[in-house]
Image 1 (cartoon, rainbow, N blue to C red):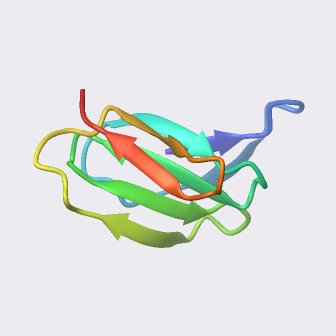
Image 2: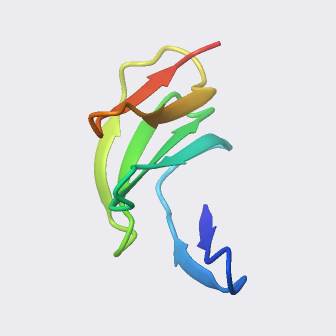
Length: 80
């Protein structure tokens, strides 16, 4: 998964870790975290400045189709 700077079009990060297609991505309101969901049934939380994987959630039993952050900054996901 790649992250680009929207104003310059330059690639900023490459996030490696999902084993299948990434279906949804979100940024925390403070810009410090990225959350991603995948067909590999996981949700991953990343450090947005370094690209390092901070957390992997493996409780899903099917592909994850939607992820985001709550207003309190916590990541959330759901299966549709």
